[in-house]
Image (cartoon, rainbow, N blue to C red; front, top):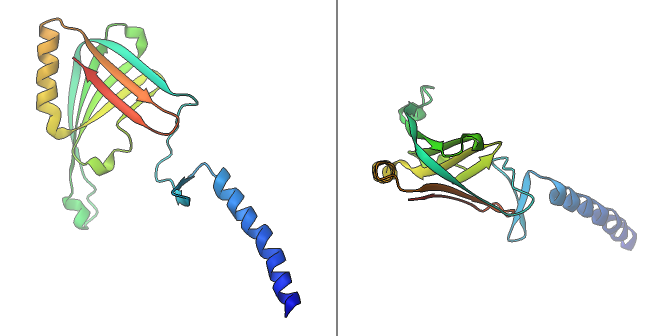
Length: 163
């Protein structure tokens, strides 16, 4: 009996070590409170904390979109709305800037993103009228408007409109 127990112990320890290593090195797995969880979205975090601030000179095109999945199930009746406001940077070489208003907060994996000269800041659709009014007032009064994006190595994201 001792030999069987020793045999099982000998082969179970390396197996658990191998499984533990694969979870630690798997980029699609994260650990929360010591438990591994599979990531739902592939997010690329910066290698060091980043803060970017850009001056905005005006608003561009506004696009109103609605979508659903007409598959014959109850999901057919679930519609998402999105409003995308393009912003015009003072320095056009800085890239593309969008403020995106979304209807379902469960469908947005991040609040802000800055990659490849593309900036997106996300807000709930309920804030559209208020933010649009404040932007229009600031541009009419020729006040400075900025977009600020913070991205940290731990996944923290923050997008701000500074009026």
